[in-house]
Length: 101
Image (cartoon, rainbow, N blue to C red):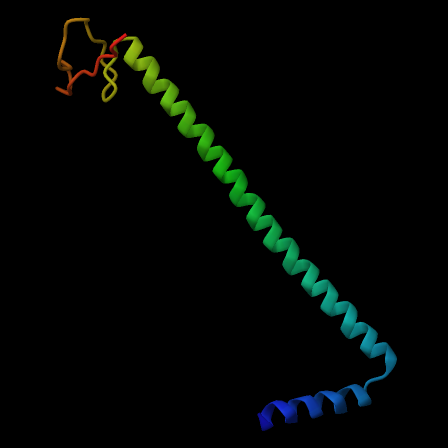
């Protein structure tokens, strides 16, 4: 506790020694520093949201491609064209999943 009080007294001495101009410079530099920190945090948060939006778009595109492959009788694992009566892919051996339409 005493250390904290000593620092406070030292701060008062420092302010007494400063002239008005140096106090203004200190206040302005502190405000600029805080503004820069806020802008950096904002840019990071905005970048994360943008990346998430891009990731969501990629996931949606992949889901659409997978659905198109199922409809077109194409193996979802290797891309081999499948016939209607096949239960396994002749190329990779994966089980063929059929839509129950």
